[in-house]
Image (tube, rainbow, N blue to C red; front, side, top):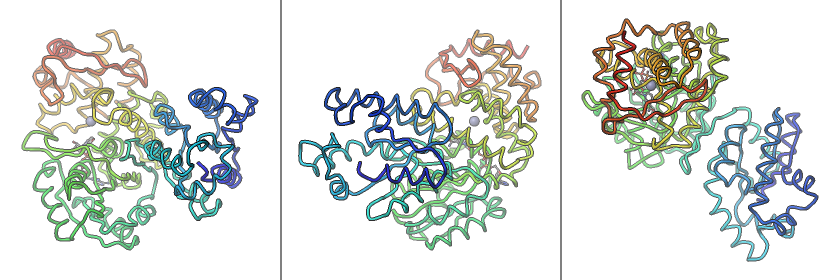
Amino acid sequence: MATGKSTVGRSIAEQCGRAYVDIDTEIERSAGRTVAELFAERGEAAFRALERAELHRVLDAGGPVVVSLGGGALVDRGARLSALERGVVVTLEATPDEIVRRACDTASRPLLQGADARTRVDELLRLRKLAYTESHARIPTTGRSPDDVARDVIAVWRRDPIAVAAGADSYVVEVGADIAAERLPSLLSGASLGLLVTDRTVRGLHGDGIENGMEQAGVRTATVVLDPGEEHKNIASLERIWSAALVASADRKSLFVALGGGVVSDVAGFAAATWMRGVPWLCLPTTLLSMVDASVGGKTAIDLKTAKNAVGAFWQPSSVLCDVRHLSTEPSRGYVSGLAEVVKTALIGDADLLGFIEAHAAALLAKDAAVVTEVVKRCVRVKARVVSLDPREENIRAWLNLGHTVGHALEAYGGYGKLRHGEAISLGLVAALRIGERLGITEQVLSERCILLLRVLGLPVDLHSQPLARAVDLIGHDKKRGGTRLKFIAARAAGRVDIVDLDIQELREHVLALAG
Ligand SMILES: NC(=O)c1ccc[n+]([C@@H]2O[C@H](COP(=O)([O-])OP(=O)(O)OC[C@H]3O[C@@H](n4cnc5c(N)ncnc54)[C@H](O)[C@@H]3O)[C@@H](O)[C@H]2O)c1
Ligand SMILES: [Zn+2]
């Protein structure tokens, strides 16, 4: 509201050589009425419906355009999530006093009419706070020229971030080659301390670049180096981080920086969740699995003896940087294992991604930076969409368990070490596809297509070589079980899954039938 969105929008469009669309102007043109008249004659709800329809029309027309939207346009969460997924949404902010000063022409601003303008502005900002927070960036405009603001918006647009809408804890994920060192200084600015948490292997390979980037931010830094491996995702590692934080006098303005695979991000994220009852943390995933899965959604945890992820918290990172260049050193078995989660993600929510992987399998296996960037971005987008709709794993977040029911059983039977997680998930996907066929949900052609793709990517797909008959008793033996039934995820089509409430015994019989 009165933050200069039209002037800034026009300037961005001009500088980037893109078309500019002002939604209010478009509505006024097609309705033959001013916004104020539409509000007066039809009311706010009707105006919002026109606004949503117009926005969809513009987005459907394709091609990057610069769109300016009124402050109330994305208050509806459905409209907001759709805009966040299809575009880069930037909130231009100004102080209430500045808004009142700029909005002196209240005749054309129906929402400011009537009551005292300052009170009304305060009330609108309070009501819309959440909507403004769930955006790709919030840019201050008070005391700044439109060109200055436009420059900031263009910089955000160029980074093409992915938003994870999580209310006040919303954040963005940036994906690209060589982005970590470049972005660190601004992400650390304002922190009283940057506490780097990494493991020995990753530190040796990538620690210097990250420590240099952190030093350039001009903040005090400290580093804690953990022993690598799942067996160190435990209370001892957590305690080492707490102790390092204590020695470095970390306060509530400290920023924890997790550099490593899913083990480091799970334990460092949990340390951040618990240090002084919660400090912000930045996630720099260095394995494919941690980029496409562990870094998004705010689940943090440690293992307790044999109970995986037994103790943890939901604690969203303040930012995620997926620097695909870090993957160049990831050992091949781990990287390929991560590709199983990529195929799973495509099956859950992105049919085009499945085709993209098929078309670029060789480049993906060769870790071609452009192809990996596209794949990671698409996976993050799917996971962001799922967790934005179900942050606490109450309903559709169960989709992410596709392939995991049988996969976990095989992984646990091997004693968490024989099969890599992704290898077990590859086999679990094969089982889920075949069981989906038996349930009349999955078409055989889809199963064949996915199994071929998993095979091409170098993942195991032969269920007959696995101890299915012996692992079957472990199905449902995890914390997600509720009584004698479980939620089985079946593939309805490429990019679409169903949640099927199944009796565990019935599921075991299906698995035994697959074992032959
Ligand atoms: N929080 C979540 O939502 C979530 C989701 C999925 C998995 N996870 C967790 O993630 C963990 C598995 O993650 P992971 O597969 O990344 O394992 P990991 O963190 O153990 O990393 C695997 C190994 O690769 C090394 N490594 C990491 N990055 C490297 C690089 N760039 N170059 C060379 N070596 C590198 C590590 O030192 C380690 O030895 C599990 O504990 C799992 O529970 C969490
Ligand atoms: Zn998994």
